Length: 151
Image (cartoon, rainbow, N blue to C red; front, side, top):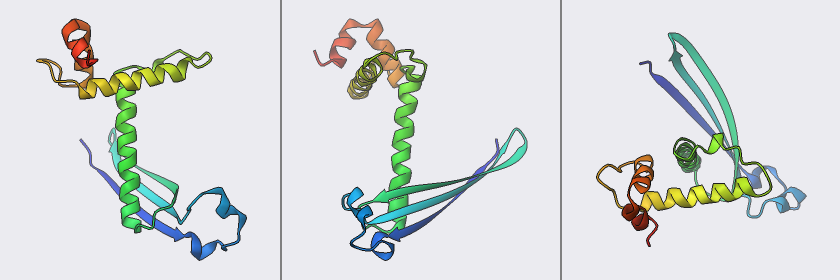
């Protein structure tokens, strides 16, 4: 298995340094204090071929934290976002859902998130260490289902 090297560079621009106090843009974002630019370059080997990708992302912030802290926050946010998306897609098949009419997609997304939250909080059964395993356990055992639903 190849190695992946990622280099991330952050640039922080304080709004007071470039935007006049009376500029109308300040009114668009309450308490805007800075703009963070994160450039990431990833070098890796895929199927024996060396590859490199480059991404630039911009974030607006009301925080007065340092560039290092804001970069850490941005990275941790995407880690949470990615893991939630993975659970919703792999365990509940959210990306494959064909529900498209009226409020159906939003309603089912809410139901899936409530179910995922309840499964995360449920006590582990003998075979239910993962969210997927706990979901299956609920289907196999009415007692486990009721305990997961807190009924």
